[in-house]
Amino acid sequence: MTTPVDVCNVALLETGQRLTIQSLTQPNSPAAAAANTLYLPTLRMLARVAPWDKMRAQVALTQYKAAVINGATSANPPPQPFLYEYLYPSDCIKVHFVLPTVQVQPQPPLTTAPSSVPVIAPSPTGIPYVVATDYDPQGNPISVILTNLPNAQCIYTRDLSMFPDLWDPLFYRGATALLAAYFINALARNEAQYNAQAAIAKNVIDQARAASGNESISSVDRMPDWLQARRAGGGIWGWQRNAAVGAGGYTGLGAGWEQCVFPNGLRY
Image (cartoon, rainbow, N blue to C red; front, side, top):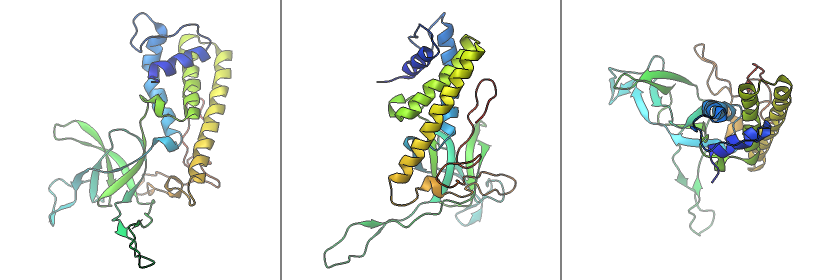
């Protein structure tokens, strides 16, 4: 079973380090300290920079507040103008869009033979929503999703940072290459080596993005839901969450991809 420690050791080898770590909390090890500090934020950033197909998740959201309850105005409603407030999925890295819960109906038989094939109508993917914060009953801040859609489901990128065995091989290579760039900056401060490693990471991540998008497109005979969304956040009330895509998939700034940030501030 591949672990985060294994991922970090591969990244350390990519930097030219002739050492490995036994755990992220290994004492008296600068490499372990760097890995423990940098691993999760780096992996979670990488998970956001494209809608990776193997990290796609869908869940029925848990309603937290509603403007109207049992026909009466709620004493504790969501902020206006929203009708519903849902709890943010606990393993969510990035929300892509919300969509309604569709009732599955049996297909009318085309012949006298009975048919049990269900019919699921296409769901809209451009329903406005906003990611915000609220407080739980104990007064702790929590993340929520605001929308006017009842019985909402959510399509999002799942946080698989601690489960490398579930990653696509190209995502794995992108993760180790990006971690290596951060490790160079933290452990060696070698500008020439860092620039070379950053170029490697950029190339691998670009290939991983393209492969993920192409796999999603070619795996079905219609455009997948990840690519159907247009202005999924609605651009309403000053909150813009544009999930539009360019021709041929995830192309263009703000068009499905987010920027990946390197230690020297380089973004792409």
